[in-house]
Length: 332
Image (cartoon, rainbow, N blue to C red; front, side):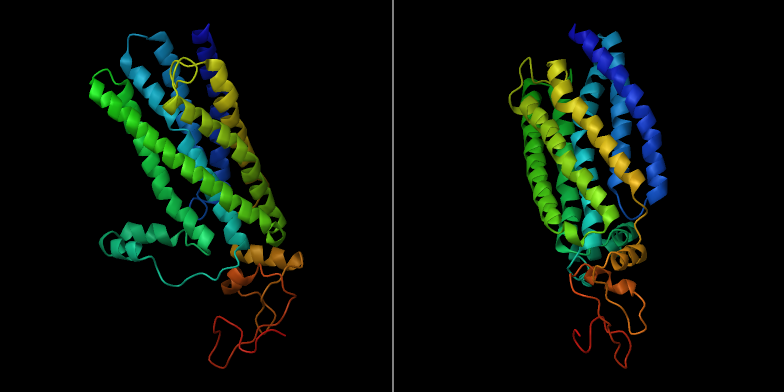
């Protein structure tokens, strides 16, 4: 019975995620691959889930082949990381649109040092410059998320590999638990950053509010998915197991939640336009949100970080030496 349910899950996953891959690619083309990375991780997730479903079907029909089992378990354990990274990426987009902190001109010391050796580091860092402390924190969270993913993959391989010794299996279980601990910390930080962003929702332009709403609704679903993974790592047994646990529990706590989160983010991507600082400034002005203006009445894109301040519109003045990044005469 359990075998038939798991086969049905794999078939449904293929029927759902193959069209979603095409849709997510369309969303990526619409928004671009450079600025906001949330939908890139969503594409990775849909590809991983499709490959996992294929491996699960091969495992069911080829029980003697341990390779299919290993890859099926590895791909099943990868799903949490792309969902968290996608959520962080979309939240960063919202924060960048509503930031009330002026962007720091000083580059990151580590990035600057690496840029001297590896030019690609400098290019990548320039495509996603943080404009607030929260936005910068989201960028920093990508590293521990990747570390947790590596720990879970390596731990899972050591735990299920036929060539692993008992000591290797114990090490694999320990690494998986460490990875899940990091995921828990990242999820809590994500929830905190989202709550802070919700408190500033009045400063957010209407289109970006839909993205924030999608992240808000997705958080409890991702929490359920995280709880299932934590129970599989720490409790185990016949109910909570990635490969041989209860298929019904997996559907109720993980599979349905993953699909809903992907749909939420896809709908959000289809309902908002491509991120553009000038367009965001114009929309703020249209919605009567404070937009700093130059002496000739035009919006200066360099004032984007100030545009969320809830002050009445005023005219900014230039000094005789040109634009000085501030207001020479103060506020009117």
